[in-house]
Amino acid sequence: KVFPDKNIASIKVAQRIAEIIKRKNSKNEYAVLGLATGQTPVGVYAELVRMHKEEGLSFQNVITFNLDEYYPMKPTSAQSYVAFMNYHLFDHVDIKPENVNIPDGTLDKENIHDYCLQYENKISEAGGMDIQVLGIGRTGHIGFNEPGSAPNSGTRLVTLDDLTRSDASRDFGGKENVPTKAITMGIGTIFKAKEIVLLAWSKKKAPIVKRAVEEEMSGDVPATFLQMSDTVEFILDEDAASEL
Ligand code: GLP
Image 1 (tube, protein in one colour):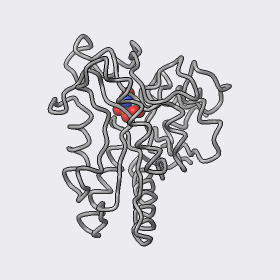
Image 2 (cartoon, rainbow, N blue to C red):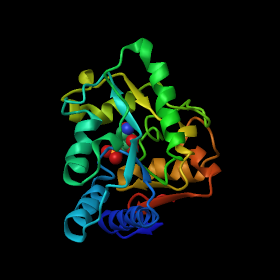
Image 3 (spheres, rainbow, N blue to C red):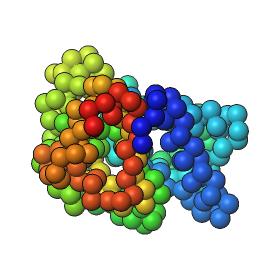
Image 4 (cartoon, protein in one colour):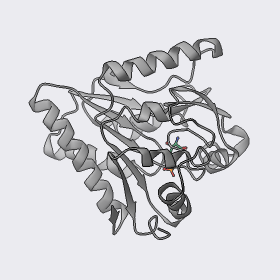
């Protein structure tokens, strides 16, 4: 779906999420949201915060799972995805802290494998995500599933691509400060979602959006694996869609 600009598109996505939250609430059930970081979903979170403050949208029945976190990363660090999510969403809504799940960047290496299995199990126990929000990196990554990721991959420790680290360098005040690794949900984990929306804005994303949508499925562009599912929607502004 192509929208005239990212603001209109972000509001649409926020409305879809709010609908799911309200539908689940009316049945006394939890809404399970899969959330992404990066600049792309910021407008969606801003609209959800507005709906909470001005329209009373409650997050009391919401469970969230974030896609990824840098490794190593302290949650108190300004660059952590914990800080990002608190700043853009969680600090401004009434979500119960125990219902927020973000991969833990502070684990000892030898505990990561078990932790990732637990993260995966927790998602399954919650019934999978009702909706998964995705951005896309210029390598074609979703979450931090870089080129070479398998379509059935689970939550795991991965090595970040050079381009991904360059793109993150501004946040870290230099590429040398960007962690080389991350913990990410796998592509198989993302497919546990009942509905997936991939968001992309601006000309900068146009070439990778074209490859994700039009190229044959392959690990070279992990986002192409989304072609396997018929519950995936690409939500684009005109610039991101300009090469399709
Ligand atoms: C990071 C995140 C991804 C995100 C990507 C794009 O790599 N781990 O989940 O999709 O950045 O970021 P942006 O939305 O800022 O372009």
